[in-house]
Image 1 (spheres, rainbow, N blue to C red):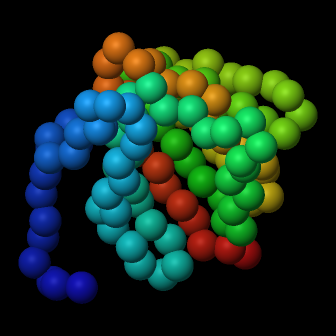
Image 2 (image 1 turned 45 degrees about the horizontal axis):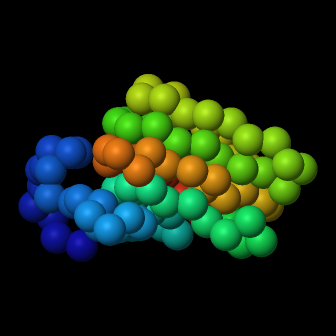
Length: 113
């Protein structure tokens, strides 16, 4: 990694696909962890597709609206400023993101253990 600092604006440079879906950008990766910026529009994972990660994840919803789904059938709605800590092994998925406007997330993936 370069020793020069990097700068940016969280809402610039990454856009969700106009036809719907998600785009990911890794802002930083080190020590087995990573920070991602995710832009979504009308995104939902299939009901049988789960994220089941080996490390904890912190997500912050910056703009838009979303719902996270969990293996027990529960869903949690998120609005701008809402955050969640998803422990390692917590089976979850994106149940819904607003199809009318972009949803922007910031995700911190911690290394396992």
